[in-house]
Amino acid sequence: MADASSAHARPVQEQAYYGDTYITDTEAYVVASSGSVGEGDDGGTSPWIAVSPNIFHPQGGGQPSDEGTVDGGPVTPGRNDEGLVILTGDALSGSRLSIGDAVQCSVDADKRRLHAALHTAGHVLGALGEARGWRHSGHSHFPGQARLDFDPEGHEDELATPELREAVRAELQAGMDQALATRGAVTASMDENGHRTVTIEGVNAEPCGGTHVRSLADLTNVRILEVKIKRGAIKVRYEAEHA
Ligand SMILES: [Zn+2]
Image (cartoon, rainbow, N blue to C red; front, side, top):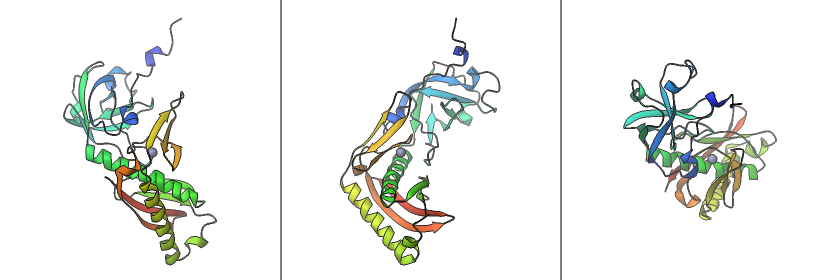
């Protein structure tokens, strides 16, 4: 008896960005495309391809999408219902790419490095907040608006005045500086179920699908900008750059 699911078997896509944040150019092969699935399966008219190895990080977990190109044409990565990272873009309209074709992929290296720096600094800030007994409730790692949110319940008093909030901000900055000075390694591992864990040496380990720097020594100009309570959350704004 043939495997009844084989007609819709998920193509194998190696997520190269999981293994190495710094691969920003590679040759890859088309493993699926909007032309290779049943009509309407992509739920839209915009053509797409999926390639492997895939170096494009799709938006998720508070981290923005990479920007990049396939064969020189701009593409935007996203994730489809099957969990594949798919690439869309005007350049793919009318392209004759089929499964097995080789393509040249590039991502914007400066943006990749900045996103990885902001995101990794976010892990450290999350750990510093949790060390204060705050419960992490949300985050954005977008450039210019990076912040972590924590549940304020039970912590209103310690943040009741501008002076107290500034004192907490300074403590978080000191904790950040101390963590960065350890230059701890950042590593990732994948279990047999495809669950990825990111470990920052001396800081913490948590499930994550984002891109990260190699070690805390890769971070610079990490600044805790503000601590405030707004719309039912402790919001800690920060910025970071890649060294
Ligand atoms: Zn992460």
